[in-house]
Image 1 (spheres, helix red, strand yellow):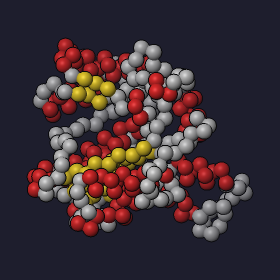
Image 2 (image 1 turned 120 degrees about the vertical axis):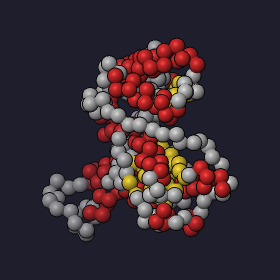
Image 3 (image 1 turned 60 degrees about the vertical axis):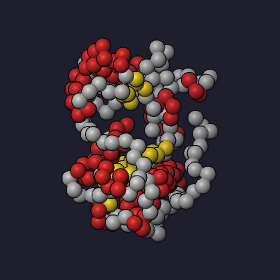
Length: 291
């Protein structure tokens, strides 16, 4: 991965020294345009932002580390190799704050950080803000710009990166018998959440309806799942009650690691039994990598 480079959009309406922030602003602008909304039409007090990241501004952090001097004791504006304000681009909430400032939001501007589940957590919290009456519109999403040597080295030491090097298209194969791990990706996504009646009233194209969501933790550490799959099974049972039916499709965690994929598959089988044959499953990591 020594030659890996960040893939930014060809048109860059929001050039920024920290790629994470640029990706976040770009996807927020694209989502608003797709929803048929103009920034000037948003009510600042009734518009919220829930935009997370699992890692923060890695590019800025790496750049600062590379150019730091060992004799630096205190960094203040105008002192040392860096302006202290650069640290703002390292903070995880920098992207959410940038979006909030751009749209002029004086409502909630939040930044969930829950590893691979960050984007889903953002959607869940955003839906709650609307359901609770705190917001009329929420921009919910997440971004990560992760192609950094330190991060790649860390995952390599964990033993979770794919060992397939001959064919990049086959490197990450969730649930495959020959799976050997994932690859690192980067990107961003943002959803515009609003009440169904509001979207219909203005003639918006609705891609999906949010029925509900749940979050649990299995208290097993930062990377490993509960080997019994008990918590995952409980979560699936709670979610099946939300939909009140067998799902049509499950988008899975699917890290392409030997243990996690096995536990996830077994939990699904334990909850849905023979009904597993009635719906499809897949993992986005096979196509876009681990963000």
